[in-house]
Image (cartoon, rainbow, N blue to C red; front, side):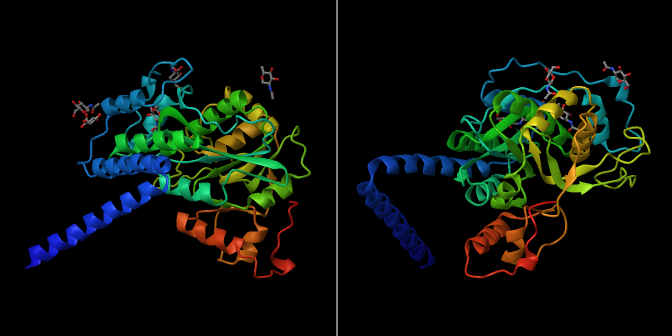
Length: 383
Ligand SMILES: *[C@@H]1O[C@H](CO)[C@@H](O)[C@H](O)[C@H]1NC(C)=O
Ligand SMILES: *[C@@H]1O[C@H](CO)[C@@H](O)[C@H](O)[C@H]1NC(C)=O
Ligand SMILES: *[C@@H]1O[C@H](CO)[C@@H](O)[C@H](O)[C@H]1NC(C)=O
Ligand SMILES: *[C@@H]1O[C@H](CO)[C@@H](O)[C@H](O)[C@H]1NC(C)=O
Ligand SMILES: CC(=O)N[C@H]1CO[C@H](CO)[C@@H](O)[C@@H]1O
């Protein structure tokens, strides 16, 4: 009895699907053909993601690199580890040893170039650090605050910055997804280094390098994580009377912060990595603004600045070296909970730690203009 009910149900589903496909075929054959291909790709993706988790090790890592787009640049070749740090094992987590052994390795091949800077006179480039597996975050950014558009004559473009995924499972499928996204949206830059918490700084320096080569007509950059909400209109309003040929480094500023000496902390920095002195002032890594002029300077000095695992502090170190002053702005909220009040979001420039769902929520709240806000919640665009 049960079996017949089941098969009947399955028959219904199959019949329905056929009807659906046939129905759509009459609609527009070209788009349907495209959709079919997409659907097949998607099914293939689902199917392959059900495979037993493939073990990723250096062998597979090479496989991923080969499968990615060939780069126009010459592959700098493997960078050999500095074995004098091989003894760094005792109390420290392995990531410290790995970082120190590869700290001098700064050149990695550009595996995928974005088209984000192809146009002339781009006013603002939204440069978002992401991980290969964060497709959901990229999708929600693309369709909310990160839409490429022109606001009051200012061209806004977007780019996601990626390394190679470290995830132990399905890394091949994830790379296929990134390749697909790159072709579809043209907004992905990817370098051939392995993603890890301590390798994020590499993304910073490689971004500066790519920017200096490919984005010469961009005026300002908003650098952010893929879990931020940005009120692009307010950012543009703020930038309206800033001269792009001057330095600009503005965000949620940390002054007189010392490296964490709590061994269990994710941010722990041993004394030998950074002495007993505070970091120079720096903008919280969740999101901050830079002028193109400042990025070119940062790129220049980064050649002389030893890599440091905490990426936002590293930007502070480079800014200090380049004599760029960091400016605090109350509209950047890189920590703390912000209530879901559209009036608050209307006044802010950037909020950190937002899930894709929350992004949609905030976006729809902002699009809904029925609620009027008092001026008291509004933050002045001036710092
Ligand atoms: C990677 O995996 C292969 C196959 O399991 C194995 O032979 C090889 O030793 C592994 N390499 C490393 C560096 O773990
Ligand atoms: C390896 O690190 C040590 C200690 O910092 C340094 O003195 C040495 O020059 C490094 N060697 C190479 C090849 O980079
Ligand atoms: C950073 O990436 C390089 C290149 O993929 C790798 O050799 C190194 O181990 C990574 N460092 C850390 C700390 O994961
Ligand atoms: C960067 O360095 C190069 C070569 O030293 C120099 O020509 C250029 O003016 C510098 N750019 C900036 C923005 O400092
Ligand atoms: C250990 C290992 O080789 N794992 C996987 C590497 O990737 C290939 C596909 O390219 C898989 O077949 C392996 O299982």
